[in-house]
Structures are given as structure tokens and as C-alpha cells.
Image 1 (cartoon, one colour):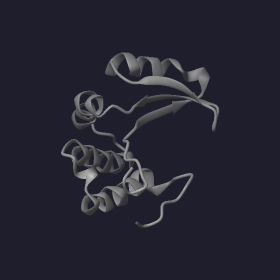
Image 2: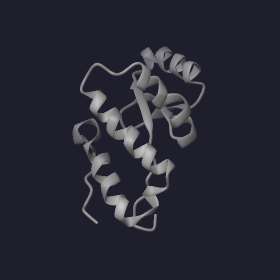
Image 3: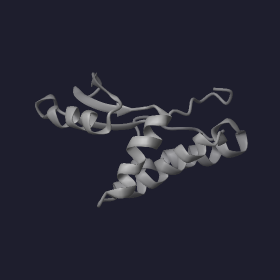
Length: 118
């Protein structure tokens, strides 16, 4: 927050409520995270925000079972950000720009909002 931004990684999967079962199965499988309603698009989201849970549960799964789509590139960017955060690099202005640039590229840079350069 010292630079006006909060760095908080989030692994999230959204489904319409009629397909919610898969989200509950994911929560059970990964043994972490939460499920919440997203009023912005009327879906349910399974979400993991804890660095510890991301490092212990989510990232190892996708390293062992890589995604077979363009989402794999987003995963690699996400993993690199989490690794940097675990080592505290997100607290340094010099590394923050690098983390920021990778975050914007996740999911092909599709965002509901835009970021300005620091």
C-alpha cells in the first residue's frame, strides 16, 4: 500500500450457480479457499487468496497437471508473482514494477479496469 496499490494474488474460478458443484469439489480437493457470490456477474466464485495455500496447494497442482490452453502462460506469470511475494520482493519499489507488469498480462491482460504506470 506504500505505493498506492495492494499486491494480493488470487486464484479464482467462476461458475453459474447451476454448476456450483464443481466449485465445492475444488474446495474439497484443494482443502483451502472459499466460495462466494459475485454480484458483478451473478456467478459463484471459488477463490484462494492465502499465499500459504497458493504455495502449498494450488501451484503444485498446476505444476504437476499443467493447463493445456493459453491459461498456462497466465499460470506461469501468476506463479512467478507468488514466488516474488514469498521472498518479499513486492515490498520493494524496484521489484514492484516487474510484478505489476506481469499481473497486467495475466489472462491476456483482460481487465475491467486499467493501471497507470507508477
